[in-house]
Length: 359
Image (cartoon, rainbow, N blue to C red; front, top):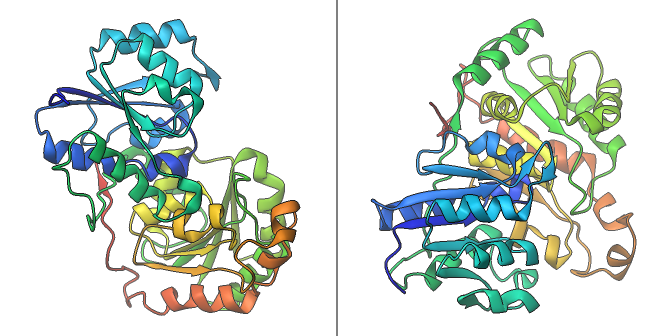
C-alpha cells in the first residue's frame, strides 16, 4: 500500500461506537503527522467530536436524522480526494459509496458479501469478543501499515470540552444548589437497546440508597424519549435527585459527566463518554458474549463492572427481551461499587485522572 496522505475514517452508528473509534485518530496522526484526516459520521455524534485535535474535516452522513443522498456523499468524498478509507462499521451502502468515490485504498471486514468492495480485508469476527471493540478498531490500522503498533497503546480519545457547554452545566448545577466542588452521582438508567438493561426500579432503589448520605446529590440523565424513565428514578430517589431528561446537548452531557464523581449506567454510549473523559464509572452488563464487557466494557482503569453470575450464553437471555440473569445483580452490589468511588474522592471534591480538556 502507498503511504496515505488523505485518510477518511467512517463510523456512522451510535455514540459509544464512535467514542471507541476515536483512538484510531491519535495513532494515525502520530504515524502520519502531515496527513489530512477526515471523519464521516452522524451529526449527533459529530457534536462531541467537532473540535477534535486530530480531525481536519467532517463529512455528515445525515441531515436532521435522515441519511443524505448517496450521490451527494459520493461527490463530497470524491471532492476531498481521499486516498485511504477505514470502514470501521461498514454497511453495503457505505462500502459502495467509497468505491464509487474512487478511494484507491479501502479497508474493512472480509466477512461480508460486500467485502468485495474492499481492497484490503481484515478477517476478524468481532462477535467472538476476543478483543475489546476499541482494540478491534485499532487492529484495522495494521492492514494499512504493519509498522503501526497498537498492542498495549494507551488510548487517546482526544475529547475536548466546549467552553459554552461547561458554562451551561455550571449554571444548571448552581440552579440546583450543587456547589462547584460538591460530589454528585449521575445515574443514566436508559440504553440504546443493544444490550440488556438493569430493571428501572433497581436504579430508583440505588438512588434512594445513595441519597441517604447527606453529602451526596443525585443527577439522573436521559434523552427526550427516556423522560418517563428518568422521572421514575427521580421519584423513587427522592428530593435530592435532579432530573435532566432531554434538556442537554451532547457537549453539555460531556461537561456534566466531566464534573461528576461517578457515573452509573447500563452498557450504553453515555457510559463510554464518561469513561473517555476520565470519570469513574460503574457499568452493568449482561454476560452474553457479543454484549459482554470483554468487548463493550468501559475502556478505563477507573471502573467497576458488574456481570451476572450465570452461564456465559444463557439460552433464556438469548431468546427473550427480559434478562433474568441481569436482574440477579443486586442493588447492594451496585451501591457498594458506586460508594467505592465516592469514598476515594478527595476532601475538596476533586479527583485524579480527569484528562478532558477545554478547547
